[in-house]
Every structure is written in structure tokens, then in C-alpha cells.
Image 1: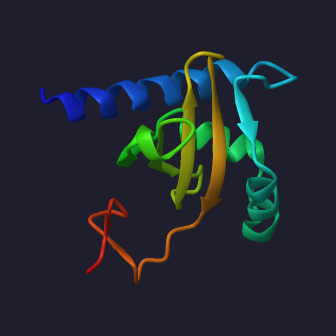
Image 2: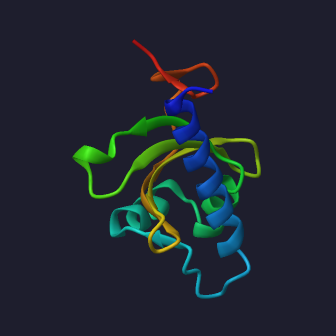
Amino acid sequence: MLADEQSIDRRQTFIRQKAKENRPDPAGQKILWSRHTIAKLIVEGLSRREIEQALASCEVIEAYPARTRPLPDCLVLGWLAEGQPVHAVVAIDEMNDRVFVITVYRPDPRRWENGYRTRKG
């Protein structure tokens, strides 16, 4: 496994674990939500619980370098209960044992291919 693949696998495992840990916790301290994300949830008609469930089995499809951002983050693909795809940008905060959801959206099939894993063009 290449170093980049190890990093992606590690991020994916961390996000999935924090989502699973957050679900039974009424205070939900393992996942933090940006104000932008809360606004996007309302616009998209989604709930935090739905996104938690999608994150619990998500797949990292793009990883962004930490050197240009405060925390390492990545774009993940998850699936809603009704089988619809959802994307989220998630920052990894290992020091505080949590993740930070930066944004969520339903991917546009005109812009994505390969099962919503690859940007077209």
C-alpha cells in the first residue's frame, strides 16, 4: 500500500469511527458541524443523523494536503438510507479525537461519474 493510500485509509477509518461513536451520544461531541453545514442541511433537506449514518460507512474520494489548511481534510462519499449519494468535506482533528464537517451536498450526476467518486472533465 502506498503512503497516500495509507493516509486515505487512515482518514476513512477515523471518520467512520467518530461517526459511530457520535451516534449514541446525545451531546454528539465526536462530530462538529460548521454553520455553513447546518445551512446546507436545511437547504438540502437533510438531518445531522442522516449524515452521521452516511459517514459511518463513507469512502474518502479526495484527500487534501494539510499544509494548506488548518487540519487535514477530505471529500467523502456516503449513502443515505434511501440509496441517494451525499458528499461531505470533513476535517480530521485527531488531537481532540473528533471530526469537523465543513460542508455537505447532494452531488450533481452531471458533474460526477464512477458512482459519484470522480469529477467529470
